[in-house]
Length: 531
Image (cartoon, rainbow, N blue to C red; front, side):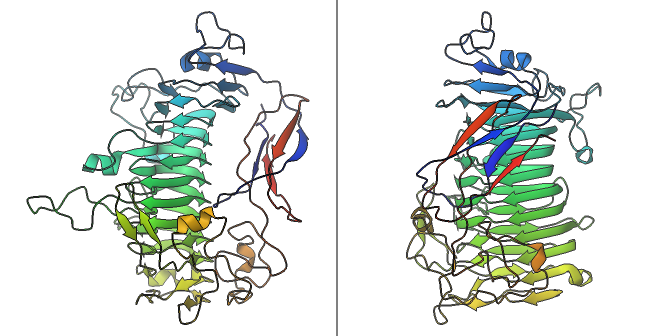
């Protein structure tokens, strides 16, 4: 069965107010598919047939009735703990079950807001192993194809994806129950989204909040795109191993563990659960990461590091990393801490650090916070990696005594200017809180009309990064920083996702997109499927 056609605007790391209507028509020839209905309040598993007039009541009953290509609409109500991709046993002894051979979409019915307690997909247990404690090795890359999309749901106590392949989580609000600090178990184990040994996983357009760790993942072929990760007590994204990662277009902010560094208890002992809260923390747990791209993300209001990369394993090394088109506000620690060798290509380009001297914010624990650090530390680049270690076209801040980037042993180290109050800044400096600045419709770090960034970037690798953070095409003379400035036109309008639908055979579908002051800007969309 061919994959469903999915339509969504390109990624948007900033929010937009949208007005007006633009309509257009799509049609596609696809195999017929059914739409089933699930209602936790009005449904009945005994007499219901899954129709709109006789919906099912439980997810388990609906799952048994679904076939590849179908859509399940969920109505208001709380559906408790639901699972798929494994048998109905306790998680430690469950076995993998493949329900489908192609995509099935489980989504909120129009105008409804279904709630789950937890969502659990797959298992890393080994069938018929003789021991429920035996797990598949991480190198196996999952053990069950789930083929399920979950769209528009609220999950109150976390999502777990274990050993599952082909899973998409979209437009969901995900959080965790219980306290957000107070123990090592909470700080290191409480995550809104946990992914272990999965493959072909996408987490997109979700709000992830009120948890310790936003996304805790060791996976292959993982995409984390266009999510809003905020007001949590530890790391925004933890990258623990795998291959082929894309972290793109996410807005990550308001991270704080509630303690000052070296905080002590009433007896004078160091508090053991004190942690650094980082926007993205990469370290070697399951394995190193090969082919990692961190692109077009916005980081601000972070207690410690914007991005922290470290590797304590001497026998394993990361490879082929690209960190590009990101925007960093001031941090409580370092904006970027790079303490690991990366074999193959290791590229840091077109990133912008934003000066914001009055960026005072309040954490989830009521602490008054203000980041004042703008520098980076890059200290573990090995001499044998020089040729493909590239550091160029980045916009930095020289403020409050922080002016150094410990860069050395780079094959290319060029066009990385520092700006200060003395030199002036090539963008509008946020007058206060960065979040307020963004919510007013402005983009931190976006160049002003007269700036020192335009057309002065090095061109050695210009063909490799053709778009800026907003999707605007870079010209042959690339600008420094995350944005490509064009004095005669504004960057193309970015829109929030409008959703995904399966189109049945010969059925037309009208999608309405709201836009504000689009002017002559081209509305760019992407569509995938059928194969």
